[in-house]
Image (cartoon, rainbow, N blue to C red; front, side, top):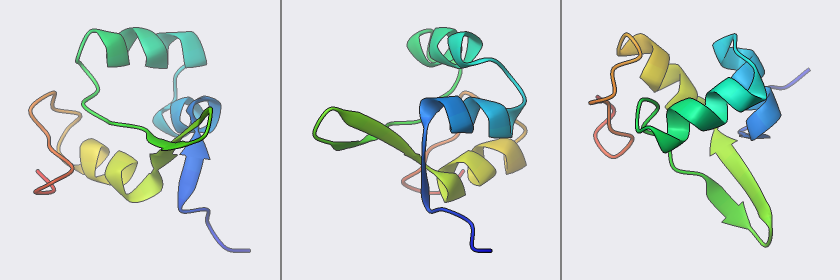
Length: 68
């Protein structure tokens, strides 16, 4: 089975071990510095960016552009 490249917020939250509402709260507070990729009304999150965020120690200073 292959891993998806992009996931919706509910799956991103699950991968991070939190509820979807907590994921949205932390996003809006700037504590999770991830930007969604939009396809119409869908907002999807890059799995590699999620992994990079976790590898950084979940730092709010992490940036997807430079991977840190």
